[in-house]
Image (cartoon, rainbow over the protein chains, first blue to last red):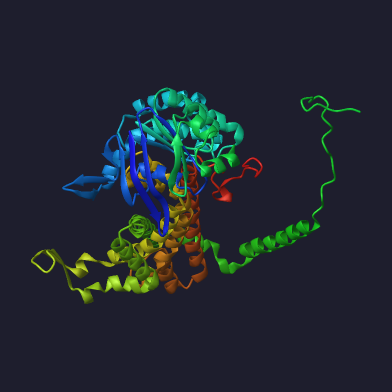
Length: 250
Length: 304
């Protein structure tokens, strides 16, 4: 589903990703952990081309992201082509990034309406189904400012699901939440995983990674230090760097 | 020892009745202001120099209403040119294309950096520079050509001068608004597969409007009065009409009051309109619209 080969990325002189190789199979849930500044969020943002990679290759469903290969040369994709690739990849942000001038239902309807030109009634019915699914049947017409952090993040998940993505990216989805609200968001994500969604989750929730994740990836200083079965990596890390990190967070 | 459980509402202590702090300074200020206001009203009513009868006579007279309608038409059209042009210039200014961005920057530099009067005169005397204007292939044949003086009459010169100048100011207001919207909004829209144009129109611009509208209201009110500058190229509007009248009958003060009253009335109307627009774009913000205080008579506690 996702295939990253030797992905490099620099911001100015700072090399944030120094060769990331990673493969995620359809239906797999991959959790990415690591200290802040390790490049895990940047890597996630490279998958849907919010950041362009400097070297290497990123493929989603076999398709090169951000570029087209023809005649042995790489061509940059046009804006509309990038947009088309992104439709199949849902993303959930740490700070929710809901559209504050639109209600919960309108947030979910926005992309189906503008991108896929769905009729309003159909988009609204689908939005209601999705909001029901994340447990927000009462909140269709609430504005984001009237919702708690956990509710906002669940709307954001519904909004990403509205485009029927084949892959969901989660960028620290619970890091901006009050501790008692983390559970409701993780429950929704757990449900998604159970339904077979392919997910890449950058997180600090070790419990979630252990319980739901199929793979756990530990990143540090722009490299993957260790990857494998979550229970294995969490309880029996092979690398010293992983041990040091886990001893601080567990 | 007695402990009161937090759910026990029957045994609430009695509400506090305390003597409020006195504010003698406030009362003094109120007294002073009341006296001044009384003096003001008194002089308005008793000073014969105001000539209220003359004010009433000219308030709805045809030349004044003529001028008023010119003021309105010039304001509305110039602001329309200014707003549309300003949005275009702001988008160009923020474009990743350096040519578009610089062209916009130079435009803003030029039109904000030269006096409006000079710009009005320039458009009026364009014929001195280019006697004929033509449509055709650059450096090639012409298809149609016009006499500049016929194409750009006084009215058109007014619109060009006021509108193109306003566009430069509006560009900076719109740019400020667009930049005030969190970058995460465009990212979220982009991640959903929306194009840059869709993101701008559906997500960024509506949120930027909250920041754009109050200064735009300012600009409109200012434009209402700036239109009086068209006198330099011989066009007329409210203030010019009034001046023409008092230069013949010497009723200067009453006629200036006529003009002032109309300007005040129009400004009030605009403020009310602005309040409605602000309420519309304030949707979803936890703090309601903070429009004109004159319009909200509710107590501040109710307004939260």
